[in-house]
Image (cartoon, rainbow, N blue to C red; front, side):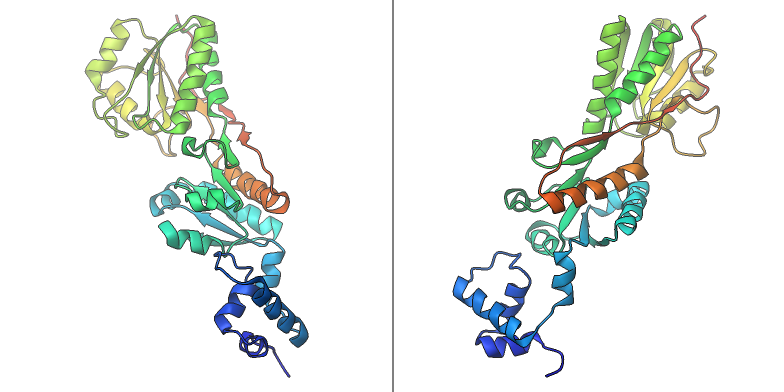
Length: 318
């Protein structure tokens, strides 16, 4: 009889074509449906020899979703490149979801599982057991979703250890103002190492990621207090450099400088000491973890090492 269509199945089973679509799609949206109706549709499909290429492909767990707001996509190109590379290596297809609210819940179920990057996870997906991996820590999830993140705490502790070895004992830490999970982890690593080393670490926030409130007067005041090194969160590097130049302070001659991360390429001056955030590797690892969650139903939190960047801005204390 040629290619079997869902309309043919609907006619044989005595139901609507919409009902056939729901049954053959695995009823991912949770439509209320009598079990007898579901079985009747499946029997009709079997008798007619129907095969659904999309259903067959999905049964092989080959379609992964990515959920993120537009600004996040723009800010994390390296992570997305890693996702694309690993998906290709594993033979997975990718679909990006831009919807929010109930529409997002419905549409994500087209995929076998989803990666969430910087956006909230709908509670309906959390309670329904849908396979999810979150890229970056998310305190609101309470550990219910496997995540992949950089080990910011260990990397930040290693930066402080380098400063200690260079003889620094009074350090000023310029903290990212919005208190992201990554910022909290960086500060945790600093505090743990400082406490063990007997360092004096002063902490300053700013009025924004553009460094508003950070100026030459603040820099001169810190140096008058005996500060010999500044440690800054990655988004504040440019603001810190402007303040140092305005104060006429040389790096690393007058004060050492370290960044918890790595400044954007093209930053003027000597290479700043700090560490790499393995963004591309985060994307690849997230895909591998999601494949594990989809395949086994279980996953764990994974932290990736941040390779140190020696740089040229940490000098020994005279």
